[in-house]
Length: 195
Image (cartoon, rainbow, N blue to C red; front, side):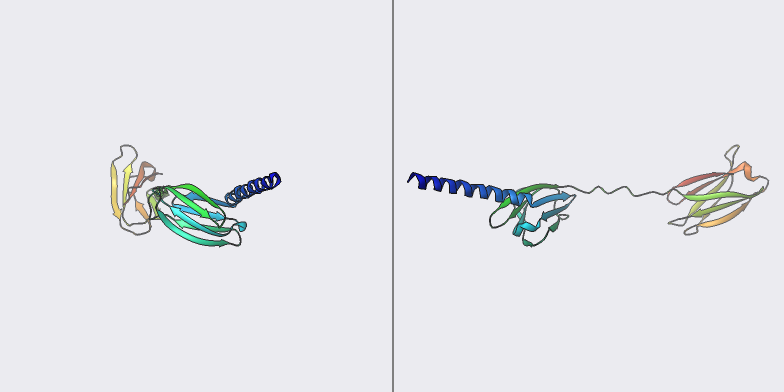
């Protein structure tokens, strides 16, 4: 009788060890991670048939899905329509169950790139300057020719040319070295060009 009791106890302990190893096996063969508002469930080949259930912060079941992992498998979930926060992901097989907690966050949108105004000037001769403006998204460039000495406006105009333009300006009574260009597009980007 004592021997029978010893065998029963040993069998019970061995079964408990197998159950603990099964839980460790599922945990070792699965991972869950969140990137912004996307959750990815990774299951390795050895998992086999499994059920994936996602719960919200209050324990409400949001989604349930059965999968079969014959090979490594990634099951994606898009959480864009749900609020940011913690979610529980439960993975279960016939023998095992493991629960992960992940947190979704808003993706910060980068500030839009603002490119500088692409305006270039060159001296054609002592009384003529050339202006080249390229890469405009909208028409409307304010061009001012000013004296270097006192910043007095010698000439100004608005050029309504889409995408860009090239234009020569003939100076009367002033030389190219004595003036500079102040060019401003419709978006408020400004460039000053000296000769």
